[in-house]
Image (cartoon, rainbow, N blue to C red; front, side, top):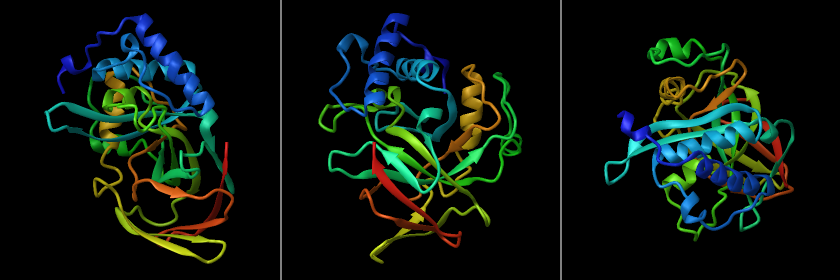
Length: 265
């Protein structure tokens, strides 16, 4: 990744104006049109600057979503990065979600890795082994999904990156009981005994694969990580669209099952 990828063109005023609009939509659970042209980030660096401005003002950052970087068809770098916020962290038997346009809860099943130690910014790269040593046993988790852009708005990757890449929160479940898995059968059983199964597989065939990139990237950007934060690394089954008001029994492979229902925010 060249340094030019992260050379921003936005002024502080543009960054703040875009961040204020996205924070308002996030707080209200709203989706809208593209931001005004003068406040719409078109470059990765500007989108990242807007995202980090939201992170400074919206709520305490309690973790990050991430994925392995890739390139699009034009050879442009795409990173998967988004803050997770204290005021959107949920646990327990019920989870409140902003409904989709279809009136459903949209979630992604993931592992959430807790950081055991603070990680200070720095330009020196930590090895994979050093990064993994910073992390504890993962939790079962669900990323809660919503975009602050309407589906027909024409939002592109930089728009969505500025907005946190579809994240609307995190439901943090129990600690993993057995070994980490790259694939397993995900079984969802509704109260009426209707059962859905998914052939769950991590997009990188390794749920730890994005972690070294995330830690080293944030350190290089001057962003500290703190003990207790959690990191999610990609959905095992894409986006699941589920009804509200029904008790659902979840089972990640051979892990002990847990119950969860969704309610609209």
